[in-house]
Length: 183
Image 1 (cartoon, rainbow, N blue to C red):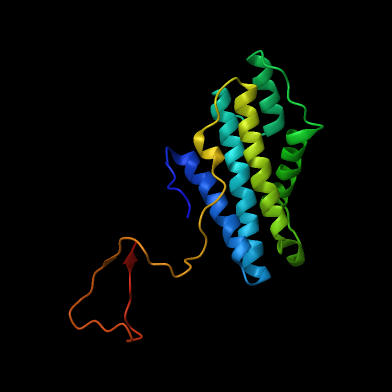
Image 2 (cartoon, rainbow, N blue to C red; image 1 turned 60 degrees about the horizontal axis):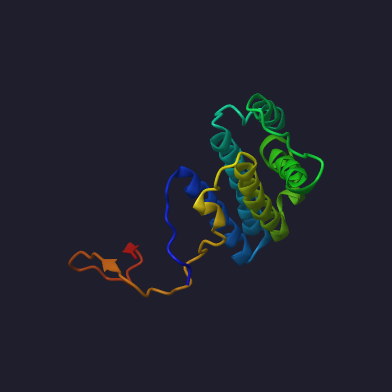
């Protein structure tokens, strides 16, 4: 069972959304759903990287022209440049290219059916980049960057606290009935 996560801001939500989408990609039974969740994982991971860089450097304008703006901000703050040609930053460049292909290019239909390894790569690279940018700026990475899982589809386990509200005369077997469950 996953330990409860402490949600300490919007960026934690972006990260856990990416983990959740990766888990849905893992659980998908068809290539259409898997492709959707892989693309969403990549986009959320990329957004999380951008925001982590903005926060670590206290510069909200890094996103557009990401590499150039990140390099300029590091230079302005007297920090060493990043090694874009190797390691995590080379992988970040690859991830950005994948994300751009989803968001800004017209891919063929078959190119949209991405495999799970793309989502796994995105999460790995995002986590490493987030930790690296905070380390590079001599700060502690946010705690949420350590999270590595988020549940996917409900597996039918209804243990724990539940709340059901029904109206008099409600019949669960009636096709017009709606059931809302809070766990």
